Image 1 (cartoon, rainbow, N blue to C red):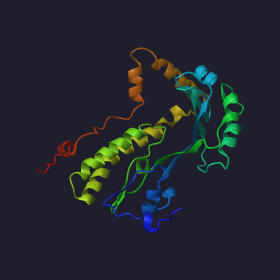
Image 2 (cartoon, helix red, strand yellow):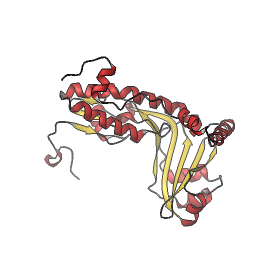
Image 3 (tube, one colour):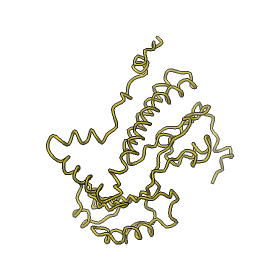
Image 4 (spheres, rainbow, N blue to C red):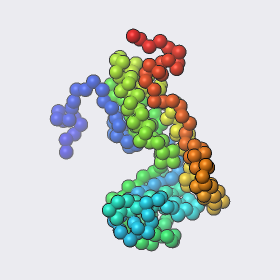
Length: 265
C-alpha cells in the first residue's frame, strides 16, 4: 500500500478539504490526535441491515423501538425484505469493546420483541462506535480546511448532520468564490460556527428524550409521542424537537447585509 511519502500519493492543490467524517484522517494530520477534538456523549451506537421477509413484514416501514433504562433497540423495514436495526446503549466509557457483536448480545440478550431472532444473526462487520460530537479550535490551517462531521459533528441525538454538511459546503463555496483564500476560510467558519454550536447544544439536551435513563422518563417520552400523533399537535411537537432557524442559508451578500456591511461591487 502506498505511503504518504511516496511521490505517487503527493498532489499540489490550491485547497485540501477534509470531509472524511468523525474519525477524520485529514484532521489528525493537520490538527493532531482525534482525542483532542471528540466530545463523547456517554453512549455507544450500533447499526446493521438484515434480510428477512417475515421480520421485515412484521416490523413494517414505521420506526419501532424497545426502550429500557440505558438501552434502546429500534427497527424499521426497508425494500427487498430488508430490516434496519439500531442499538443505543448508555456507556460512559468511550472505549469500544473488542467484540461489538458479543457486547450487544450480552446487553440485549434478556430483552424480548424481535431481539431473540435478530441478535444471533448480527453481522461481524456491523457499524459500532461511540456517540460523539466534534469540537475543534479552528476549522482551517494554511490551505487545509475541514467540512462536515470532521469538524462539525452534531451526533445522532441532534440529527441534521447531513443537512449541516451540505450547508457548510455551500457556505464554503460561496466564500471561496469571493477570492482571498485565508479570508474566505475565516468567513466560512464565522458563518457556520454559531449554527453548529446551536445544533450541538440541542443534541446534548435531547439525550434524555432519545435514550431515557429511567422508567419515569421513558413513560414521559412515550406519552409525548402519543400526544404528538393528535391532529394539530404534531407540528408543535416537531418544532420543539428541532433547533431554531438561524437563517444560515443566505448568500454572502445577504450575510454581509445582515451585519450592516457593504458588499464590494
